[in-house]
Length: 137
Image (tube, rainbow, N blue to C red; front, side):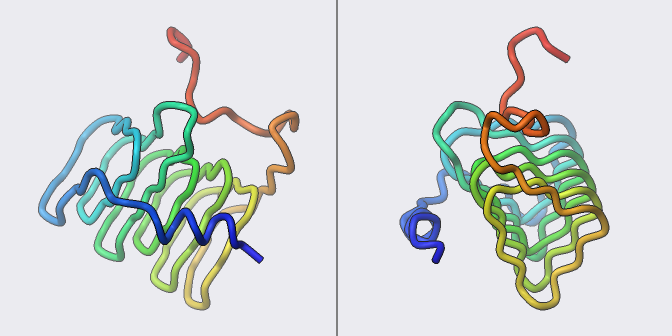
């Protein structure tokens, strides 16, 4: 059913790791694939057009907005999540905020304190682009 996304998850090579003892205070922009075991106090935003994978481990926490192509969450997010193609909420996921998705997988045990917002296509007026234009706030 999710063959295309499953292939992406299986072939993803993590390019960057934010370790368990690391705290980032501010916006974290990345390209390629990222795993967060530590804490980010700020937004986590994918750069570029190619869908990147964000993996948030059960020890990881993000206090801010998440905008990525593919999100695999097993930790805590306090803020909205925007998954352009796919969002997976694993058993220990805790999201306080709306989850915007095209395709979603929710495992038993995951908790969402917010709304699930389906994005049908890029022409939908409710879809917010992954990357804001330069100079836009």
